[in-house]
Image 1 (spheres, one colour):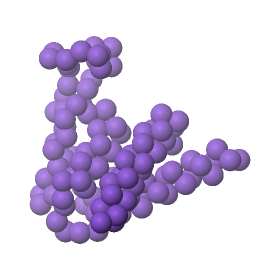
Image 2 (cartoon, one colour):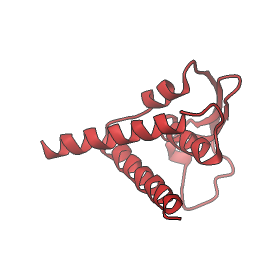
Image 3 (cartoon, one colour):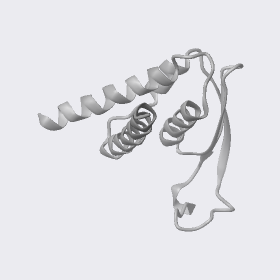
Amino acid sequence: METSRLTTRILMETEKLIMQSCASDTFDKKSADLHKLIIKKHYNAADVAIDYVRHRINMDVIISEEDYDPKTVNLALATVPVNIFFKNLCDFLKSCLEKDVKSLAFYSRILMQYANKNMALHAF
């Protein structure tokens, strides 16, 4: 029961962070970085570029996990280019959220990172 409440809380706070980052028509670097992190995690992408004007996401999705080694520089990683259209960025990013344990841990790290940045900004 406690785990389900924690899962719900992490997902709700992550959605709230996504909504805050999409609230403005102009996206700052911090918001763009958050958007890219969520998309990279969901699609297992090596590189993500978001065209906010044309409502497009271009990314290189990793085909096989077997060739990937986080300890080395991966120069010959098999990827496939993907171009996705989105109508509403906020809804699209929310649809990328997953409920597995690994994803929840990832989202909680993002929440801590962005909460610390917001606290540092509000401290002055």
